[in-house]
Amino acid sequence: MKVALGTNIQTGPWGGGNQFASSLKEYLERCGVEIVNDLTDKDIDLILLAEPRSNLKISAFSDMDIIKYLSHKNSSAIVVHRVNECDERKGTVSLNKLLFHANRCADHTVFISDWLSGLFKKQWDVLSQYSVILNGGNTKIFNNKSHTHWNGQGKIKIVTHHWGGNWMKGFDIYEKLDYLIGTDKYKNKISFTYIGGLPGGFSFKHAEHIKPLSGKELALCLSAHHIYLTGSQNEPAGMHHIEGALCGLPLLYRNSGALPDYCTGYGVMFDADNFEDKLDEIISNYDSWANCMNSYPHTANKMCKEYYDLFLRLLDQREQLISDRKWNKAGAYIMMMRSWAIKIKTRVLSRFR
Image 1 (cartoon, rainbow, N blue to C red):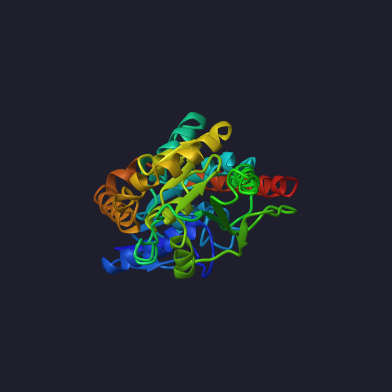
Image 2 (image 1 turned 120 degrees about the horizontal axis):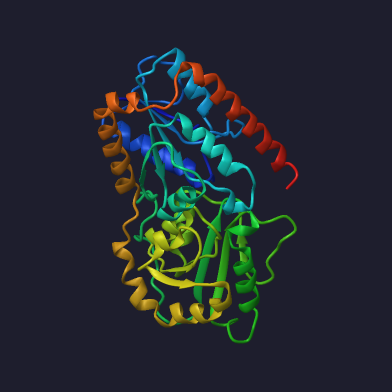
């Protein structure tokens, strides 16, 4: 099997899509799959569209590149579109429409959470068959071997991390916790560490801020804490809470987006108006939640196996999938022009936000 992985894998701190691609590449190669990250070869069996926005550094090829490849080079390749973003995540516009048009080239769609699949099914008809495959973290790096269990003495250490500094990553909650740990009630009880980028003009008054970390350095930092907090809004999935959980930290997570898909059963859920009460609750029940974390299921190995099994199944159905395509060479040009127009609009609008 030859798979075109649509990601230019980056080194250092980067987003969850990069970690996904790195884990999948390693797993597939162990299974004997040949991996390429362009559409040069004429004998590609399966193409994974991971990022259709070709202006992004991480994007190896777009939906327009795939349509050209299928139309002029190899029509028998199967296309899987992994959808891991939405406008709701960062308050953007036109991204959902861009993904809709990009999806027209796909034979199968993978959503990274039930929440995300439900969101898109409400907004547009999925043009191909679809699956939901949840993200997973690399347990070679993120594990609880170095985790220190809180013994009830001294401050309980809370941590979160985000590569980017968008406000919707949960900064309303992080700002609230920053305030709380400066009050008499909490100043000798809780410490809070934020790892990653900050919104422009924002700074913490009491929390410790650490520059973005990745890999083992990040894992060791997470493991030195006791509770993992995520206040992210409309998160399609995320990797941050997964990495915290795999390091053995119970989760204090927002009732928003896909966070319940990944966190239920491994910590305490909160809303913006009851955050302080839920903070007290997870501290009071720390031991029982900490003892659950060994069974946290969202690992990279589990995720990658599901993708590999899906790829094998789709290749077995290759003939039927190709016959089910709702476009041909004559319509390919129109599809590319529509996709191009949407991408230009998305880039223009993003400059004014």
